[in-house]
Length: 144
Image (cartoon, rainbow, N blue to C red):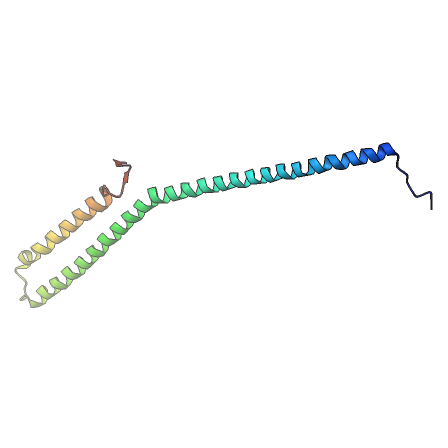
């Protein structure tokens, strides 16, 4: 059994004590450096994510919000156009039912409806499709 027992010399014991003392200093330092490194990585990732989020928010408010506003405006104009068309159709049906046959005053009675159709076509072409409203396509007070 004595062949398995290892005896250490005083120099070896001193060396082991020095290594343990050095480890007491180095290990906390390494742990601190690792903590600093991971904190830096986390903060850097957070900053990148925040910049990406700010970009998406700016993109939504600067581009998509005016587009949605324009689409809502088009939809509102289309619904109004549809309602006016249905009302005019109903009114014209009533005029045709109450008119004597043959309907000789056709052009006179149709004149207001013709003006409504012309106005609606001009309004639809110019205001909605060709000339967007100033309030929807502005950026920092300047038109695109």
